[in-house]
Length: 264
Ligand code: ZN
Ligand code: FE
Image (tube, rainbow, N blue to C red; front, top):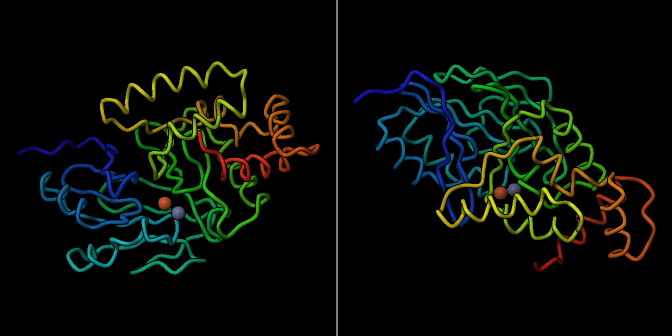
């Protein structure tokens, strides 16, 4: 039995549509947002890997629900947002902090990205190219719901992602891509890149493959929540809201409201 000395990122599916992203190198593995311990334990056993760290983006149960059970079996650090209560947290993080993830030889940099939750953080690093672990802030062709933040908070958080290297691979925590694209196609009727992405995504889901990771470039081209400054997106949002929307943040807020009630 041989382990690869390359660092790679794989998806452990959990619940209906969560992905527990797992960074592995040699015999070591670190998990991002383990909402459920069982599929992680199963994967570690099958691949003969030792858990070296738990990395957390925000406090929701589908992201931290597995921490306690994993910590009973593995004494590992839990990297966590400083402003939230995370089970087993050992290292409290805010924007500008740096994490050297044990075992897997990856360094992550922390961004504060409030909106979905008030203390939500994201991690940027390099694993064979730039990568982003964004939890429930940015989704493929979508974004998280505003449970604890304002539209202005989320717009500013998404702006941080928009300024990353376009080649950055985006590891979102949920498989929401096709539903999000159905909304994107209505929010920006003239965007041919959305239709192309629906075809590619449908082929993957038909074979039960993740549509993720995405890239920042692809999000900038197809995600209506990053495209609130585009005239056609503004027009669609204005016509749905029945009012003029002066600034991109107003367009964003109207899109988020619209999506909440959208049944594609
Ligand atoms: Zn969440
Ligand atoms: Fe979630």
